[in-house]
Length: 321
Ligand code: UT7
Image (cartoon, rainbow, N blue to C red; front, side, top):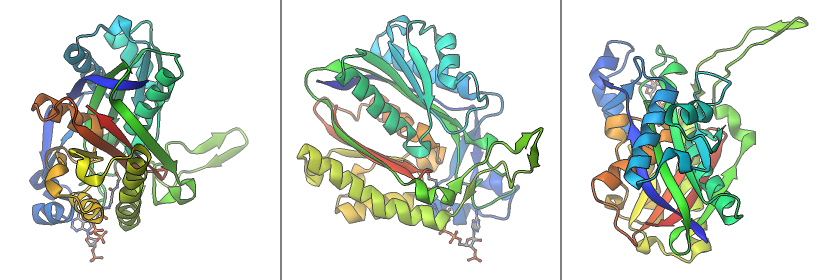
């Protein structure tokens, strides 16, 4: 028994911000950003909220799947940029779309979040607890990025993606692996609250994303090929049998480094980061939705999904579409 993706959806904010727009904010250039990251533009919320973007993505996924919100049993939202601590985004989305019967909660594994949420849905269905799930990844990273820090503000974008999954007897998720390395968590972090109570008052270092880009880069190029190989070994599938590698969209050079290590042609690594930037947990489901709507995902195709990021967290799964 497994789960099958039966519908996809995504939503991006209206405002597109180009590299040229960022040249007016920080000391950078379109050329530097494109050469070092592959990114040309990203979408930034100017009113859309995490809940509104994620609800739109979920509604589109339900429509694409031909399912009703009220029939969903589990609603998981992966995010690391919630505007509210409580209630969770999943409960806000539940209310917005009318998924009244679903158990709804958030999950934070940063850029691996969507993948870990998908694996969680798989485990629930495998255990016989639920028959279906709506799994989303959504971010408004523009709200936690320091817009004066050229090392980070050029990378990130806002958006949301979602999939509807259902129990299936054949195909679907064939296997997954997920790992965490909390000891190295400081290389990418964001503190959201000062220690403040009647007994202590300690100011925060910063409330924005802090990143050692080179360390994250090296981690991704080392660990992602290894974790992909691990899941391929687990499922008995060879690199050459994989039709598409749907990777977290962080940096074009990271994707090229991973493809090279796996000895796989780059044309099997679809990319949308040039247009949308790094959307953390929204990256994989938005890319999946774009591929689905472009008709590039055919029944029987083998896909590898792989996420990696803050935590540090990383993982991969194999899906027979
Ligand atoms: O989802 C996971 C989230 N994080 C990531 O994926 C980040 C992974 N890391 C990266 O993508 C890359 O490390 C970056 C794109 C962040 C940086 O690229 P890099 O090739 O590692 O550059 P660097 O940090 O080594 O900096 C090289 C130079 C430095 O100047 P000096 O010291 O050589 O004079 C930086 O100050 O580039 C400078 N620099 C910039 N210049 C123009 C850094 N950011 C910028 C910028 N525009 N935006």
